[in-house]
Length: 221
Ligand code: SF4
Image (cartoon, rainbow, N blue to C red; front, side, top):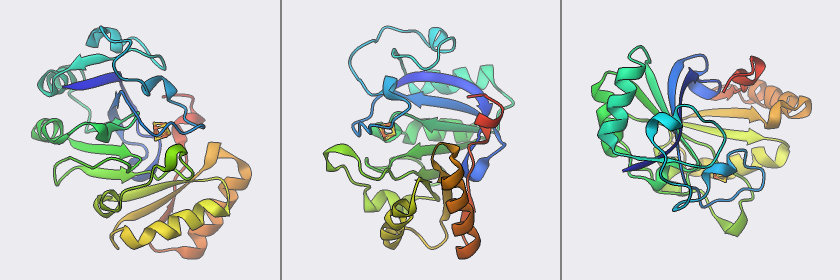
């Protein structure tokens, strides 16, 4: 079973698949408790339950989640958004769940699955799943990014506010596959952070990319 906090259709605004139409599945639960988190409504488990999937479709940015089987969720997505080429599973921390069965069902529909994870929980997906690990610098409680999560990443997307964040990424690179894409994303689209990401991408070249939160330019989720 999966705990679904939000379910909506939009365009992937960040990273490798920027501009791609996608169904977003936001799962409930996260143990990281980052002070800057913009989805704090997803943190808690075991409360605010009793919500149906149809009610989830009509809410956003609020507590409350639907408890749904992988089969029911995949069928619902197929019936509601048959045109969507991909499904993005985010959170909260989606890797609190074993996502293998759900990924397999979506892939059987001919769609790509991308998961967006902090990398602090074991990644349980299919071999075809596109895994984006977004390390969080300075998490409370000393939570660390797992080397095996970095080793599974197809993309490492680092939110960068200052040079120290780039150094944090550099320290993690020993665990990242040589072919993985490295996306630098300016913190809150700030001018200084954007300039730093821009200059670093130009300087380093190769697998470095600039990731902008393009959905915020047009004020969509
Ligand atoms: Fe929020 Fe992500 Fe940090 Fe979890 S890992 S607290 S969802 S920012």
